[in-house]
Amino acid sequence: PKILILNGPNLNLLGTRQPSVYGRETLGDVERACTKTAETLGLEVDFRQSNREGELVDWIQEARDSHAGIVINAGAYSHTSVAILDALLAVDLPVIEVHLSNLFKRETFRHHSYISQAAQGVICGLGAAGYLYALDALGRRLSAQGE
Ligand code: DQA
Image (cartoon, rainbow, N blue to C red; front, side, top):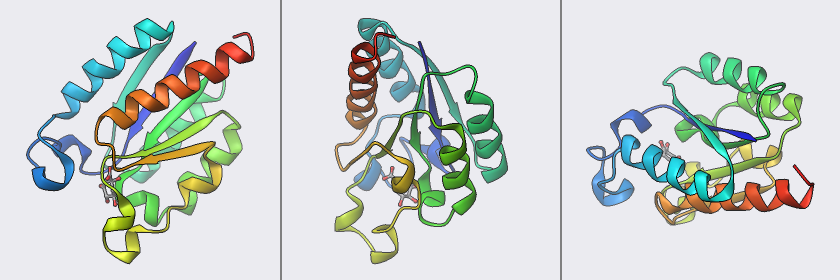
C-alpha cells in the first residue's frame, strides 16, 4: 500500500526556518526517515510539498484511487483551509494530521485546525518523529484491515 505524505506551505524551508521551533532537520531528511520507516512497515511513500493550496487539493483528489492513506502537515493552511478539509472528506481515506511543533504552546490562531475534522488522529509537538508515528498508525490500521 502507498501512503501520500503531504507537506504544505513553507515546509520546503525546514532546517533553516525558525530552527528553535521546527528543528534542524530538512524536509529531505524527513523524507528519508519516512521512506526507511515505511519499508519496515511494508508501505510505500509518496512524499510531496507544495506552497499552493490548490495543488494540495489536486493531490488529495488524485489519491482517491491510488493511495491507501494520507499523512498531512498542511502548515498554515491547517488553520485556514476549508478547501483542504473538503478534499480530505471527499476522498474518504484514513488521514493522520501531523505538526512538528506543539500548536497548543503557540499563538491561539494555531489552536484550531480545519484538517482535524477529517483526521483519524492528530500528532503535534514531537518534531519530525511525528511523521513516523503517523506511518506506524496507518500501517497498523491497514494490516488490521488485511491490506
Ligand atoms: C506547522 C504549524 C503551523 O501552525 C505552521 O503554520 C506551519 C508548521 C508545524 O508543523 O508545526 O507551517 O504545521
